[in-house]
Image (cartoon, rainbow, N blue to C red):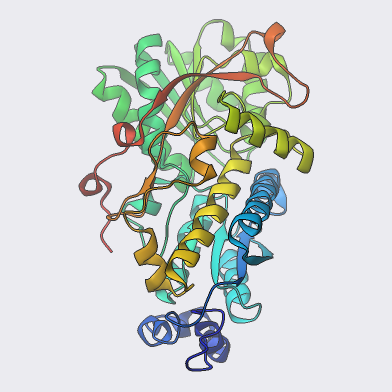
Length: 422
């Protein structure tokens, strides 16, 4: 089995990587051709080791842990359906690109990972993707949305299971345009926020609307008052909150304290239900885009949300689904290829249409892996807050509802427009 054990040669790709491990990451660069030749094409995939490198501490820990919980639910389903034994080995990125790479490298070279997944921060995911592709290891950036991952920074063996910022911006752009003519954007100043700002600006301007100002906010950050004051003085009708992680909670609460919600339409392009721990703060959100959440109401989605509620410390939200779909698609690709070798898995993924339970959870609309940039083309949802009195807390939190479903092909830019070139 490629990567696990090539029974034909008695040698594996990960063994070769381990042998070269002392050379460091730089020493491995450029060796992917010969390393890749040692993986793939061997025996079966009845046993797989998955290297899961993500945020397990710090401000993104809740996102990393939730995605890991979702991945574990997929492992249960895959074992039952396919009879494959899957072991998850974890590493903490600590929100540092260099740490993410070193943890990923250890999982492959020392812990025997056949393929890898994880990361919340796009900046971390980009560096991990570079290492994975240079060393012919398949990598799924589980929860990283920066356009660069399937654009200018795309890599041969990186497959993004969530949407790009552009897909979410296109999802919410029409609603933002309908609700206000002039917008002020606050965005976290790193790869995710930068590409989010660019995408939302592009969509609004294409709708004939005006972005009257922008503030690049440090991340993480405790004091959003100066940036909110700039937004207020700009006299915009709407404020786009493109702020990452739990910082969005801080920024929203500070916005509420200033009373700005009474005079502005509030929108965000990427809804994370877990960010909101106060119904008042949640209720002021007028429009948002989402990959999945408990507000997506169908039987498979509701069943999945119930399972999450029973098996996770966090109420179900998008990160649980991202962990699930990452594990689901990676393992199924290895099984189809009968190998965890990078080239074999790549062939099994490119152009593949998803038919697994991951599709049903999103409502059954078309999902497929686009060959040109390795983006999972999938439905997206526009969301709005429920009235406070209608917000559900039991058996899990449901404070938002989906107002419209968008086909993936309708919100994704063309491969040519992404700038991706392998």
